[in-house]
Image 1 (spheres, protein in one colour):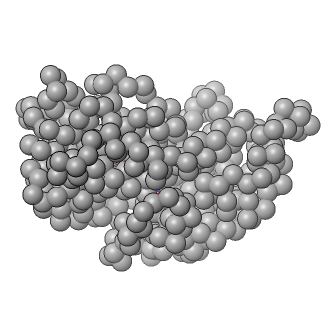
Image 2: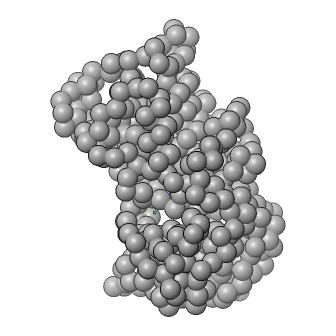
Image 3: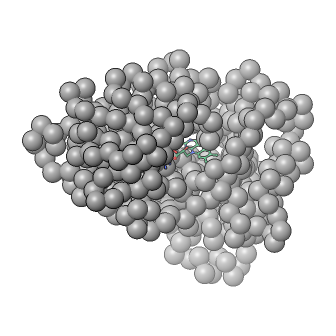
Length: 379
Ligand SMILES: Cc1cc2nc3c(=O)[nH]c(=O)nc-3n(C[C@H](O)[C@H](O)[C@H](O)COP(=O)(O)OP(=O)(O)OC[C@H]3O[C@@H](n4cnc5c(N)ncnc54)[C@H](O)[C@@H]3O)c2cc1C
């Protein structure tokens, strides 16, 4: 093969989409049905938001998402503190049918797909799969957060946040709003979400970092508290029923410094290319998969070195991802105490919270980082 794409989720599908038809390409995935089950809240900022979030992209046409991928479009984010204070932020998201989107993009790429095939690692430069070896000139490692490709190269493991999500039917919230909740009782070290998909269906979930949780608490109990007891969320879920449930992990770390290892290019969660303070990895994985494929196309045209990929993804993603990580680290400093979290974040304005969502660091946060030891003593 010219190219093997190991893992066809978001990054893999967007790599297949961009790889030239003249190349001999195979996309490999362990799943029977690409993208299914959906392990995701399914929100993607609209193109207008992406221009602010990733200001150094050369081309935003990736975010011209066809209408048929969308199940809803939201206009605001409501960010709810443990004391009930709510920030109402103008921010537009597509809520997509992520499985259909991945399938449609991968299948319409025209490249060969090898499903129900596990990538097991590398041996003598060849890709080892459950169906035998594949000899590929270039490999895209897009096998997600628990990357076997990263493991086989002995790359360091990322910090993860476990997450659990229900799809619920009968939700009574505003369809234009994505709700995000912070608070140790319901989502230690992370946040909870209600994402309306339209027609009363929604994705309801939480992140749960055990190091911030009470001893003996579990993610299942915390999600059930969020659904049934927590006043600010359960008010929308009184009549809602669980249709399905998933558990997965989200990287909450910095990306690798380099994503190119000889002929292997890492893209997406496998390299922790994620907006870590909100666990948003769809847009960054789209960009990374697309950028990897552009470099591979040029490489086969005899033009460039595969290491150009490092320059490209860093130009597009690195600054915002580092800001996101910095914000996450700040957040972590207050995540052990809901009162303190409420007091500190009550100092923020809607505009500050809007900047935070867009990976910008407001001056108040910059000042807070400088005076943190004093602030911690006062609060
Ligand atoms: C509960 C939850 C909610 C989330 N909500 C959002 C959200 O609303 N918006 C957002 O932007 N981000 C969200 N994220 C993060 C986002 O889903 C990921 O960052 C994004 O999907 C990463 O894309 P990827 O292509 O790198 O990995 P994935 O989409 O995970 O794709 C990896 C692919 O590799 C395959 N694979 C893995 N291992 C192997 C193997 N050994 N052999 C063969 N195939 C393999 C998998 O089957 C999968 O198809 C959420 C994450 C979780 C867990």
